[in-house]
Structures are given as C-alpha cells and as structure tokens.
Image 1: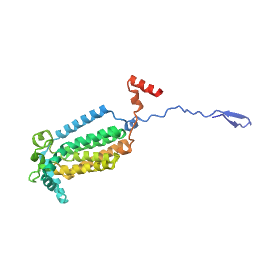
Image 2: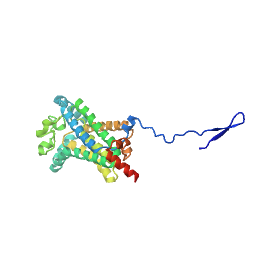
Image 3: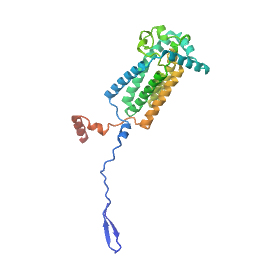
Image 4: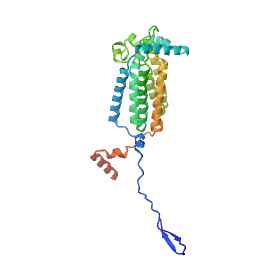
Length: 300
C-alpha cells in the first residue's frame, strides 16, 4: 500500500504512513478444552489398552455388585406384572415356541454368548480403520452407555425370566447343554445372575446397528445394521435371559451415551469429519529421525 496525502489547515500537504498489517502473525491456538474436544486420530496401542482395561473393569464391577436375590426376584415380579397389565407379557410364549426348534434355540444360545462381543469389536475396528475422525465420539457413546448400565445393576437388581420360580421358563443353555453362558451351569457362580436391567446386549447391538446404518455406504449393510438389534431382541427373549423392558432400559442407556457424546463433541458421530490429520503437537513429539524424514519429504 502506498502513502496517503492529506491537507492541513495551513494548506500544506502531509503524508501519512500506510497502516501496519502484521500478515505473518500466526492464528491463535485453540483453547486447551477446544483441543481436547476436537476429533483426532486414534492410536492403536492406546485403544487396545483402553478397551481391555474398560471391559475388565466393567466385568469386575458388574460381578461385584451384591446379587440381592430377594430384591431381584421382587423386582422381577413387578416387571412381569407391569408387562401383563399392558398385555405384552409375551416372553413365556416366545421362550417355549423357539425352544421347540432345537437347531434354532441352540443357534440363539451361541448368538447370545458370542455375537455381542464379536460384532461390537468388529464395528470398533471398522470405525478405527475407515472412520478415524468419528471413532472417538462413537467410542464415547459406547463407553458411557456401559458405564451408566453399571449404575442400573447396582440400583435395580433384577432376576431374568429363567430364574423366576413358578413361571415355568426354560433355561435353554441348561436344557440343550450349550456353552458360553456365564449365568448358567458350572459358570454361574462367576457372574452376577441378577444384573438383567438394563440389557447391554440391546445397548451394544443398537449402538452397532445405528453406527452401521449411519456410516455404511451400501444399502444392504444399512439393512443388516438395523436388523442386528432386532434379532438380538428376539434372542434375549427366546433364551429367557431378559424381559423386553430390559431392552428398553438398554435403549435409555444408549440415549444417555449419545447425549453425552453430543455435549462433548457438539455433534453426533456421523456428523464429524471422516478423517482427521495428525495434530502439529503430535508431530513435534515424534522421534528425531521421524521428524527428519518428514522434513526431507516436505523439501522434495
């Protein structure tokens, strides 16, 4: 910019220097909280460690909650009465009907024992690999859902249908001698049998289903994502491990998880960028030889 001229009161002209513009001033860095709340690329070693420690802690706390058998059976009677008053106490019919088809109920027993681990971990790996910018927000939903479920186990012990005396529910794992249930047979003393409310089979499967539906590119994957929690609901009822109201409890826990994630990241996971670059702060923490390689590549 050139100099500007102005006339003074005496008629003389004077020059004014051009305004000083500091074009090289760096942009202000975001606040510490802003950096923490911004999506960033996950680290594999940290995620593996976090998942392992979190699941161990979840299992430890869940199984350490006092079983409170009398309260759990009393709560089960109350749930059963509520469902009957609504005309929706269908668990007994589903349990006996599906149990009459051996191959189907055996398959459901293995489904109940394994798929909530396999599919949930599979979705986490898929997010880590293909949607790293959305991974942390989706993980926060899952972890906070699980954390609030622990509060439910402590405050509201509930016996599953198969443990209700006098109701003639079938414990399908015991009847068909399938493995995998920590709440039946020789393994029942290793797990809290009265932690039926809320159902994390539903909480986790619905998390998987919604994430797949929101982020999958193909229609068939979206459909499978929506069918997964529906199939899980049928399984938990058919095997007499949960009432359908336990599933409602799992949905409420998941709603809390999404609300917390939204409050922290100010967006739902699918609204966040799919990929994020490694922050400058992390680049400076790389070993010197790695930084030198990065600099050499930048000069090419």
